[in-house]
Length: 267
Ligand SMILES: C[S@@+](CC[C@H](N)C(=O)[O-])C[C@H]1O[C@@H](n2cnc3c(N)ncnc32)[C@H](O)[C@@H]1O
Image (cartoon, rainbow, N blue to C red):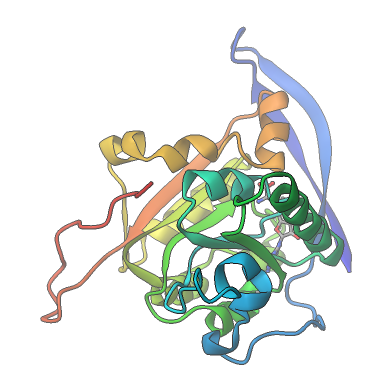
């Protein structure tokens, strides 16, 4: 079912500083709380790595059974972020999770075409059609992920629909479970109210802490958030403002003390 929501969209021109009145921008949302029918692995050990990363998992001389997905792009849309990350982190497995069937098929085709035209590249990236609000623990084990992305998620403006948002205190418990200590959640949106919401959920969660300005500056991934995805490019073309919240999963020692910050962006 598609739900159409709109918002008054007034931004300020970067060059003149004057308010730029744009009219109502329609956004088509899928309802993540409705029942969908697609296959889901019953546990992370049932996820078929040979299907998703055939070049890495089929031939015996290249396969590495211990390799697991580390990055998840939640609501990956048309896959622009994954494509950029794939070459930036060629040794890291990553996956996009997308609710819409046709969009997922498009991303699959996009990845296959890139693999064909660039032999040896893009073998570390894949996509699944799934509802991330329901099935994250079916895909990832405790502490498996080092990065999760929530780029330009559906805003679900109406208060009664806030429970459909992909960032919430309850879902952050789940994300904290599948993230490794030191792993990072990246969020960005052009909807100020949603940006405030995502930041406040993360700020108030006991298992997350904000990255410092120096850490944000040093992380090459942060620069991609505005530019790599199709939605980000659309916002940039319209000179729209963006709001990001980037937090780290706090790491604990076995005695329960907070560990020193050990995990940095690797590339
Ligand atoms: C506004 S688009 C942004 C896409 C992409 N991240 C970008 O920046 O271009 C939000 C995407 O999230 C997907 N989505 C919404 N809820 C989802 C859910 N529960 N699980 C997986 N994908 C979801 C939508 O189908 C849509 O493609």
